[in-house]
Length: 75
Picture 1: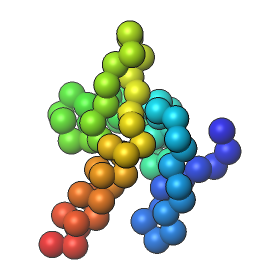
Picture 2: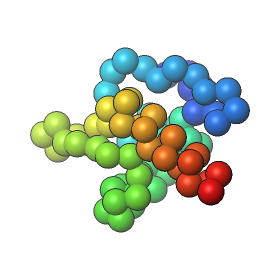
Picture 3: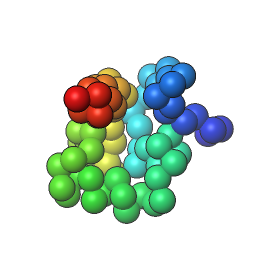
Picture 4: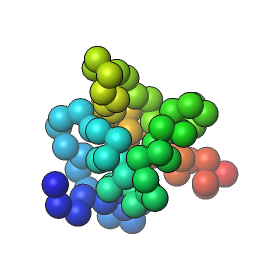
């Protein structure tokens, strides 16, 4: 998948497909997929949905979440 990281200074376009927890780990340089699942349990991360037993994220929801994090940091 390459090194597609979400940088606040130089944001790159998100893929047009639904994202996996592993995609978020790579983009945000998270320690593990468990971090993504903790966000979900605590309702602090981007909104996700299940396809069967697989967790997926809409790129638009991830971008909205990033923007909300940036707005919160600026306050």
